[in-house]
Length: 154
Image 1 (cartoon, rainbow, N blue to C red):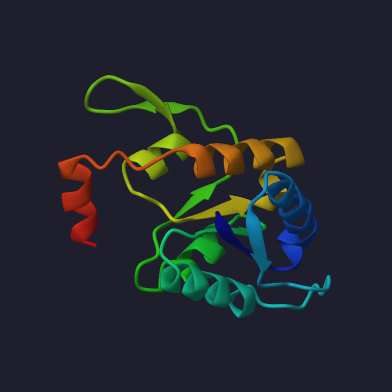
Image 2: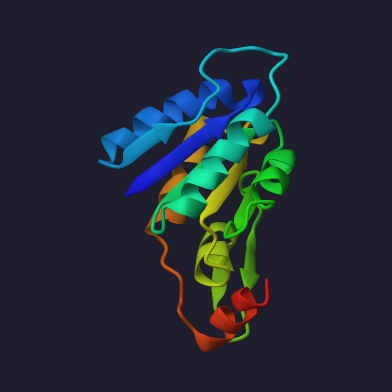
């Protein structure tokens, strides 16, 4: 799978570790920056190109990182065709309409067909980030009519 990855200074170190992790899982990874650790950089300079690349390449996915991941997700979600969810780490589970218990990462893939995941790098360990990325990439969209209908209304 083609994966675009990007971060600002706050997620720089974790991004570089996740890039290696993803390559070891045999994914094709394209790094959109940051390419150096610069505490004065601005996340839109890296997140926007990653989001555009995901939008222009159906079937690809994006992993973006920042301190909280919130601003990065807001930036990515400005690009038509992007559905970016934020994840901070273990946040519990939710119950869907059928009573099935889902974790947050599985839910955003199954119900919202999220194509980008924004990680709050200052809120999780490397292992938590790897787990989130793996679940995100392995979970498929449900293709249920109600979810398709809702996404079409975006």
